[in-house]
Image (tube, rainbow, N blue to C red; front, side, top):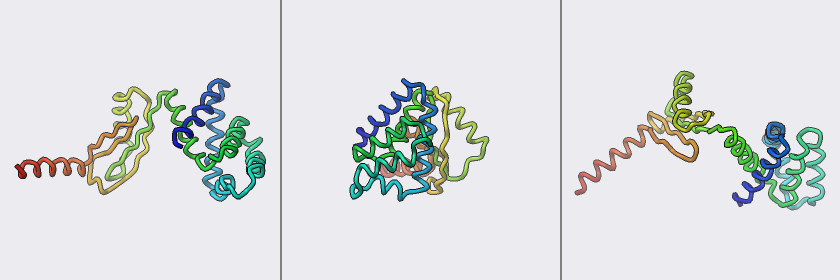
Length: 180
């Protein structure tokens, strides 16, 4: 199902590029995402097979027509029609990933044991941009269980420089040496 959802997002992305409306459609999808996050019962309503499809499609048109790009309204109706509206957040994330790829932007998920200060974030961002050749957006998270260091997930690659990982590797080396 994930591949099918990605194909829906890619189709919307291609249309947005073709019509030169990437920014407009992206902004409209942000609006849709925000509305759905603020009103989770609406997502349940639109995704419910117990309500006639025509009623759900009409509810989408009533809620979004005039408020977001018409291509997005049509896209939402298509997802509802195909019974895939419950995957709207995945579609939006995939659409954004296509936009980032075209704009040469990489998103780095950074996990640290403590909050990084602005100087550390800036230095990390500069280093990652040099390594991947793209502009980098940092999404920083704190997880004290890694003890120290960083775990960076960027462009499908994981760089685990955490103390927890180093201790795990050391344990493996020590265990391996004592075992023989």
